[in-house]
Length: 349
Ligand code: NCD
Ligand code: ZN
Image (tube, rainbow, N blue to C red; front, side):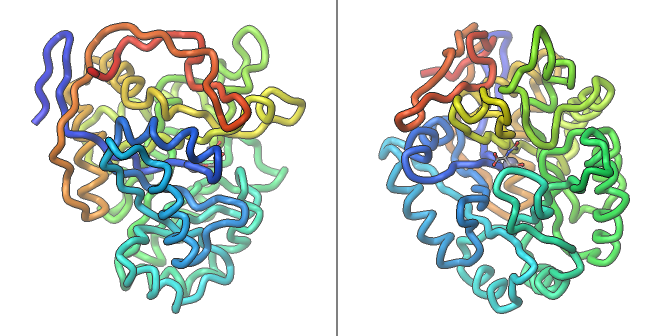
């Protein structure tokens, strides 16, 4: 049970249900920020090449664990990258491993490293059938691709064209609508059965699309799905703080080196890992809903994934901290969310 005073919040150590850890030196630069705040994290498989089978995921898991500081008891929860060719056999192997917790569906071309994603969801129906049988969730990047759809409408069109038919065809399939950004997505999740849930990022409850252009083009606010209008931000914040167990924490922290974002064609992704939990705390606090943070961050996701809730506790204090302008990222630099600004909460050391 969480205890809250004006100045302190003690809660069960949370889990991050949507995280990009990358590989190599990037991995070693970022993973301990997450391990400091989260017990477990669902690790996205969009590496180059993508993590498409259990063997690759087990090897990736070992590489992650080798980078985790021994003072942390961090458990990476592995996922596979769904492709047009994912076989029923590979779903069975994944389910039996007990290490693979979900499959990630990227529409081909929708986001970073999605070129080997699914070209037509119907091509994956045999794999989805097998996932449904074994209880493995499908994690969905919910955006259509193609120049004919406005970038701000891609999530809403995805709901109509892909997700609604998919959820009808597979009523028993667990589906996590990842990083939702719109009122339409909130409504879809609330109207769906209890197999359908959603993750929510810090940026989509704190920022709207004006923040992409405030004072000039802001590459560090560029992520996919792109930030939406204020009305959508409010709907997503209300969902996150509502106490509805269908909505839980997934940062979508997506590290990219500074020089790949501050350039003429910048990468999509916001790097929130270093202060993620504190930033969520600030958002919940501003909404007057701090008492809903523990369930959102530490209970609902674990329950959805049939994982035991964590027992270790941690404490946040309401004390302003400065967020650095940049952090080391291998031999390069990375700019965290809120760089050069402040956060009104911090982890108690
Ligand atoms: C993610 C990344 O960089 O891997 N980028 C992002 O903007 N969120 C991919 C993703 O989750 O879409
Ligand atoms: Zn992501």
